[in-house]
Amino acid sequence: MEQTLILIKPDAIEKRLTGIILSRFEALGLEIAGAKVVCATEELLREHYANLQGSPFLDGVLKFMLGEYNHLPDHRIHAFVLRGENAVARVRAALGATNPEKADPWTLRGQFGCIKNGVMQNAVHASGTPEEAQREINLWFKPEEVLK
Ligand code: IDP
Ligand code: MG
Image 1 (tube, protein in one colour):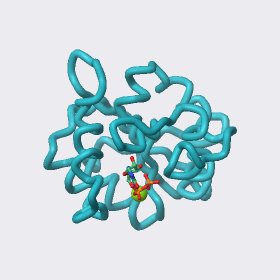
Image 2 (cartoon, rainbow, N blue to C red):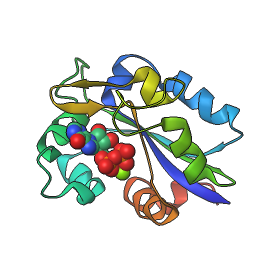
Image 3 (tube, rainbow, N blue to C red):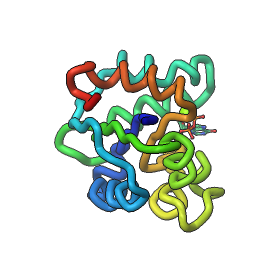
């Protein structure tokens, strides 16, 4: 069964959207195989966004993911492993485009994302490929924290 990593980003946590976002994935028939609240370090986030190394907006993305643009008492990310047939592609389709202003209006990013402080505050991260999913799940979860 295919697995994928979901991160509810600080903008969505501040707007209390975690339940609504999760319910959309559950409606697709995907199963929650791992769940945790993480106070992510800059080191973990740099590793997670290794593909953005050298890009002009990496600093903004890190600040955003560290909750610096939000007003939460402490910064946190809600992390989930979802599993199901074709989970990676189906979750990405539910997310919509990276740019929330270009995302289709029925997608999660189209409905809940915005651009602020020069960062695409697009509510939720999901792995782009099955290989990326394995790398990211290993980064955010210990093996014993995920259903086999
Ligand atoms: P993805 O999240 O759709 O996989 P990536 O290219 O992996 O997109 O970028 C990671 C994150 O970096 C995005 O979700 C978004 O928050 C931010 N980001 C990506 N491209 C831009 C940009 O051109 N301007 C501002 N922020 C961006
Ligand atoms: Mg990506």
